[in-house]
Length: 215
Image (tube, rainbow, N blue to C red; front, side, top):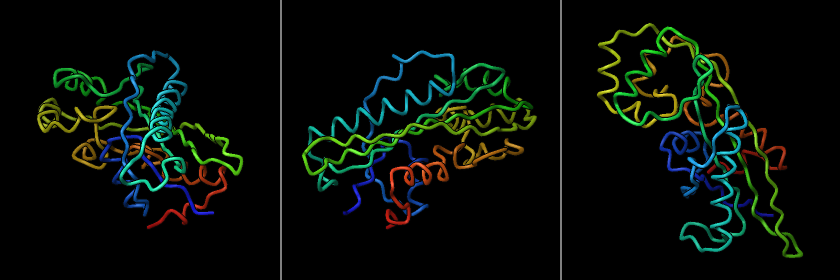
């Protein structure tokens, strides 16, 4: 049986770039899922619920609509992801503005944070009886991030680039923010947007081989 079309339920350039560099040309289909409706204090549950909400929304959309890049919208593998950073027990997503980003970095510098990324994988294929298979797997990966003792001048300069305003955790490991991370413990691609090793494992649980998705 031909593999389903791989769909990324996100507009994140970092996640798209990660998949592309790993050989997967994903079709980008951003979700309109309202993240603000979800309020949880458990970081693991929060990112899993958000990731699943995004993947579910896109899966439902594809079942009901055509897509120019997808030959069969009912035969897709939809990946939803969501990331947050936990510092001093407090959950952080993207900063709302430059002032918050500066304040966040003043809190983060010299400390160890935990980057949580929820991963939700949904297989929308139909079986021979035209019944939705709806196989789904939801997981979370956590990576420790050791932040450098950056100066106030460096923080201001970094925030002025605009990069941290686009990132969960207020930094991009693959960008200028990489200068301000001393080390990480765990999966480094998880910090960028999604864990490639975890995705491989999830595909394996669904009896797919990641190599079959390489283009």
